[in-house]
Length: 153
View 1 (cartoon, rainbow, N blue to C red):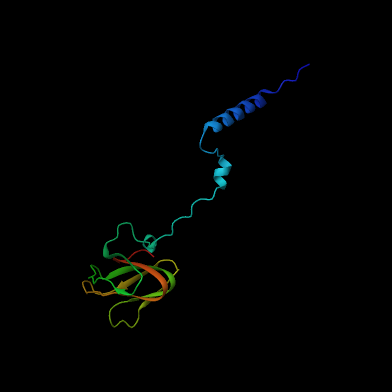
View 2: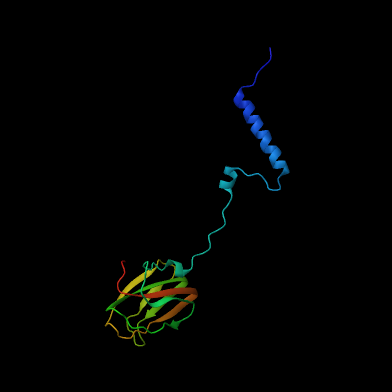
């Protein structure tokens, strides 16, 4: 009496032989779903501080997104309302201090490596504002934007 292989086993053998015959003519190595899943993915490119400023969908910029790595003055602007919002972020080791004019006695410090800082500044509508960014630390990169009105925090 002759032994007969079950149909599923025969189909499996045919499938495997067809796959191996196809791979022999191919210049690309065969991969399986499990091998692809285990393959290390390319590291995500680091986010720029600009990408993480938590800006509203349609911001009304008083100062557009500005980036830097040194201390500098931002362009002067006049608020269109009695309040504006500052969105600031920095990377590196240290702090960036936001000064609200040349004689500011209460500047705002933004610690680098922390989530975005969003602050409201209440002022007279139309009164010129002169902000500056003061860098204190090493390997610092900052981004800031000034938006008219208040933003949800």
